Length: 337
Ligand code: ATP
Image (tube, rainbow, N blue to C red):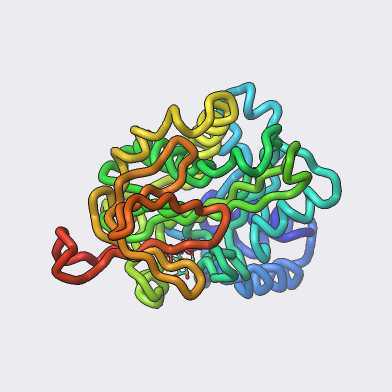
């Protein structure tokens, strides 16, 4: 017996007695119990009630391959390789291992939990069990690295598309790789590359999207963060959200490959939470202060500084944009990340 078959049965959210599980999986009740203990050790909450049996207590239900496939357009469902893990170090790391072993993509790596979820600059992405979306798409890209400047911005637009399709309004973006809700971080994007920097390349497009974070985990974060369930006081089916996100990514990435970022510039600026605002750009030990003018046709940030207009490229150095909290900041009560 493996844990995914036991999970398949528990995924319906109903009670199943140890005896019933044993019969269906053709193992002893002790073997069932040991497997339940293993699943619990991953952080999955499984209730056990005397006389009734075991039941998954996840509020969100689990990710199911067949539900994701059913929501995808048929041409995608028939061609996309999907790897779904219960627990993994990082979906980006898993995708990279496959790419290093010859995978060319497109392929999708998804997990219910990440034990070492990655942000930029070695930062951690908090990834509790069966709560959120953690996914990495391996995308074959013909162009060179220099044409990829706008890719994290395009990915953010795809996240917004999927959220809007699921009735979530009020989403904004922050250069270069964040998606915000009510000014708080809702999703993070991590891009990694493999191959010849002059092209062709495999791009690993990683997205972490908070759907239903345990409140104590949200509060443990250094900067304000939020999730869909607490913000909208509604429930979300992660399977449907994930399928919409994958579809939106395919659509945006195909257009980006054909037309470049320029075609999306205005759309991105209309969602930019920091447009017209004073910010500090932290890059290594250097901080540059200026007012955000928008982005250029490559996706680089345009900043008005005391020395004139500066163009800041996210691909060259890992930069962080922070609002300026002083008298020159035209926006009050900034609690942005
Ligand atoms: P910034 O631009 O805000 O400095 P970043 O873009 O460099 O951040 P990311 O790499 O996107 O950061 O994400 C890592 C950071 O995000 C962590 O340092 C932590 O503060 C925050 N974080 C980690 N997990 C989550 C989560 N699940 N939801 C929201 N924020 C998170």
